[in-house]
Image (tube, rainbow, N blue to C red; front, top):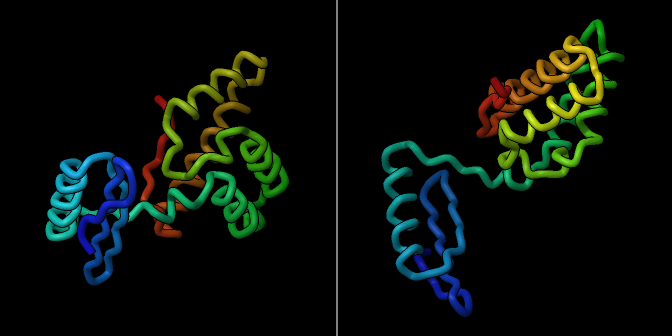
Length: 150
C-alpha cells in the first residue's frame, strides 16, 4: 500500500481502504504523491469514483447487455435491435465505456446526416444511446453520465 517504484520513470500508487481499491501508475514520484493525497482526500470526503469497471467494459459490452436484457421487453424490439446493432458496428463500440465523449457521438450523428439519413432516424438512434447510458448508470451501477450532444 502506498507508493512504490515500478520501473524506470514509473511509480505505482496503491490505496486500499474499506470498500475502495485504487491503483494507478504515475510518471514521477511527485505526481504519485499528489495522486495519492488526492485519492485519499476523495475517499475521506465520499467523492471517490472507482472507474475500473468502466475502463474494462466497452461500449459494445453495454450495448450487448441492453440488447439482451432490455430490448426484448419492448414493443418495437426488432427496430431497436437493428439500431443497437448499428451502434455495435461503429468503431467507438470497441472503446472503454468511460472514454466515450460527446464528440464521438456528435461525429457519428454528423456522419449519418451526411449519409442522407432522415432526421427522425438519426434522433431515434441518439435517443436509444441516451437510454442505454441512463440504464447503465441508474440500473447497472456504472459511473457514467448521459452524453447526448447538444
